Length: 201
Image (cartoon, rainbow, N blue to C red; front, side, top):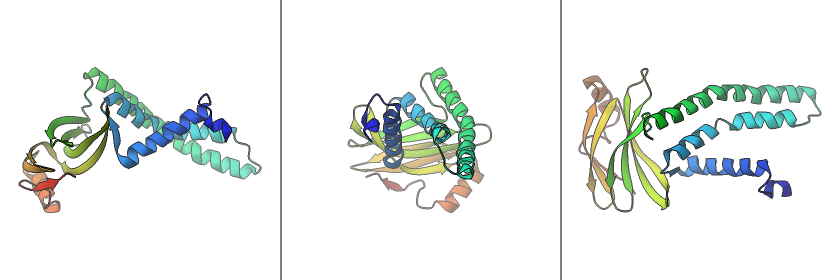
C-alpha cells in the first residue's frame, strides 16, 4: 500500500489520473483549455492498454485463467487503438483550426450570472448530420467548471436562446436542416421546442 502513496511511483500517477478521469465524467468537470479536455478523452482509451500491461506482468497459478484474462484484456486493448488514433487526429484538427473543435463547436453563450448556458454544434462528419446540444456551465475554480447537459436537438445546425432571469433560458428558434428533421424531432420532443422555457439550475 505504501508504494501507491509515493508520488515517484508511476502507479500513483496512473491511480490519480484514473480517479480524476472518473470524477470528470461522473460529475461533469471540464476545463476551459480545450486541449486538457481532449487529452482526458484520449487518456480513457489508454487505460485498457495499461491494464493489459499489468495483466502480462501478473503471475497466475492457473494457466487457463491467465490465457483467459490476457485474451479478455488484450481484446479491449486492441480495440482502443482506433479510438486513440481518432483522438490524436481530433487534437491535431483542433490545433489546425486555431483551438476550435469543429466536432463540438461552441456557437452561442447566454450569461445568467451564476452560470453560463452554451449551445454547441456537433458535426460527426459526412456520415452524420449536424446536432445542437445545450449545456449549463458553472465555474468552480479558475479554468475549471462543472457542465450539465440540458437537452439536444438532432438534425439542426443553429438555435436561438434568450435569457429568462434568474435561472432559465427560452428557446426562440431552432434551425432544422430540413422539414423532415423538424417533423421527426417535434414528434418525439414536444416539451423541448420553440417557445419553451428551460430551467437551468
